[in-house]
Length: 63
Image (cartoon, rainbow, N blue to C red):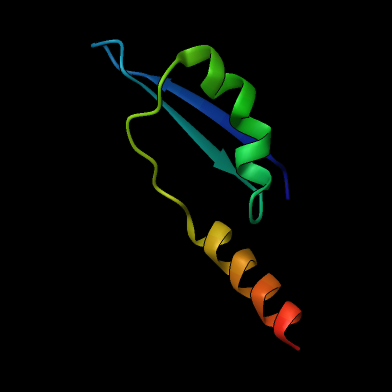
């Protein structure tokens, strides 16, 4: 799957960074430089891909 980072800019100047095709914490690592350039994060919504990978890592560590 292709990995994509989208930066959406609203007419008000608010920005939103969306990642697609990443699993687990990869999305945060990949978009960190963009988020740093944009300034302080006001909110964060984690996707199913993030949670799915985190669950699999926890299950593997417990086995």
